[in-house]
Image (cartoon, rainbow, N blue to C red; front, side):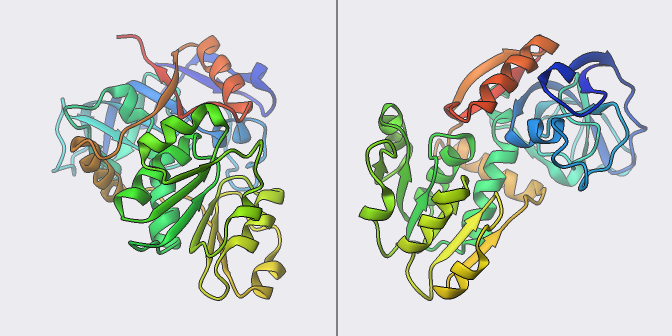
Length: 313
């Protein structure tokens, strides 16, 4: 099958198209013919070699960990899924990623694509949607009526986080440039702060949960807006200053996504009822050039919503 791979770590120039053979299907796995995948920052961080201590894989490596498509083969132990089912997933993190015509997924990680959701909209969800859900609820313990600050609300993770927090009955505050304010209010944000003109740390207090996707000075300033003793800061980019958290008696936790088909199905059900949507900012074709251009956009950190790769029909 055709895949876009890297044969060594480095810049976008290392992306190359080649034929790859997938391993044998295990009894609890399915083969998915891909209709779409999407781009996440982990893709190019891994491409550049930042994660090689964590994932010491042989080359070639197929990047990408989001898939939406149709099951074409099922392992002998699979009972809940059949050939022809339209599914999406965040597969396990292996060197056989989703920048490919086909991918292998464990049956417990699959969710059904709702009738009213396109392959492109479905492919945008898994990694970003699950990250948002786990950060807010599994780790942040966000409750109805609490105030949550979501940094970078217009990004891939942010757009899902706003909607999921709103669905849970939280008061949602987010940061974004002015051009994205209307979109984020439509998604459910109660307040949107323009980070170009306003320092959030000067206008906010008594926040219950901060969802940090930025790190650095943004994270540091976030400690000052949280409720002392009960505030929680959940980050997907690491905690830089543990001492600061201790000093204010704030729970600060850095998280790594756990693959989870059941939680993905919860998001799918919200999408089926129109309560959560995917914001797809850009769609690129599945080719070496398409993936290259998608990485260029992702690396700017200014893409709105998710960047999706669409396979040929």
